Length: 232
Image 1 (cartoon, rainbow, N blue to C red):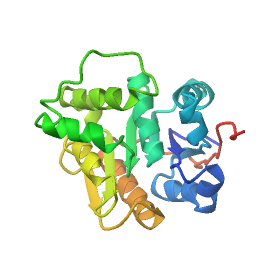
Image 2: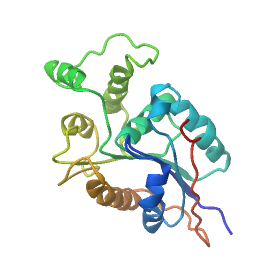
Image 3: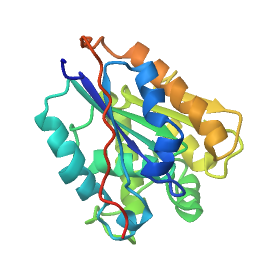
């Protein structure tokens, strides 16, 4: 069997874990759209983020070994909290990920959003001196990173975003959406839940797959389900 040519690593939302992703058949959804892909469903849940370990463990235990396998493309897909994790990984390890699929990403709390809006938008916002990432400043550093996308078309052309028109984070997600090329953002009817997320994932896979250069097709596609270490 030939190896798959691309990898999709799926990061769950706050209320989910790897078992939830398995029950919802997320790996099969991805394989249906991208039959040339391996799929890793992770158990990267809230305790890892609270401990400041999420990005490092994602790198050391999943993505570093994945790069050793020499996939043609490596993608991160994240829902809600997982979308935050995908963005924070790309910030910490620029150039390591070929594409991002972001579904209803959590992008921080409303006070910082209001600060950005009061400044006249993300382009005019002055985030202050750049600092080492901490639990207290990660939201500011995340938005500093997103702000720089204005000068990074090579990044934004492989970022795809979907979210609901009734979900509570839609104002902050709209700021991110404005940084992306036309056609890379899908605003769908719905709330912050799986009724929205399943069709959103399917849509993003279809659009991103159509837009990306063709990847060589293996003779027999493989799907692999893996996990970060379980919560303790």
